[in-house]
Length: 105
Image 1 (cartoon, one colour):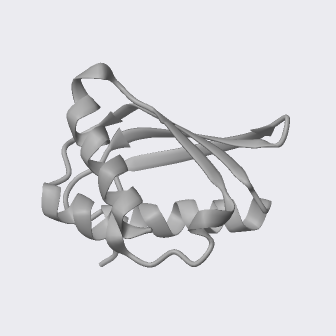
Image 2 (cartoon, one colour):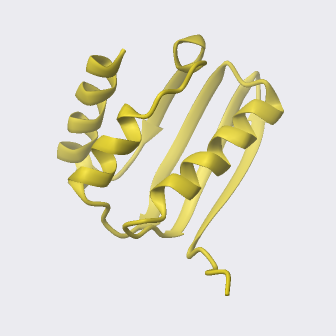
């Protein structure tokens, strides 16, 4: 039986910027599916600039899952500008992910 995800994604394009809003609950093991969905949306829209609003998503992903997700190869990663808006209490994990992404190239 297929497990229904507890998160939702919505998006719009505004002045050439793909704006994505993530809502619901994100749990360990769901991150890869979310990444695939996001990649599909970005590719379908030919986005060069992406803004993620993650303030309304709940849950906590393990450092291991986060690290693995950031380290996965993304051939077009350097071809787009990405920004994330999140809640202040998650600044530490955001900083970790930014550093990991930079180190991954």
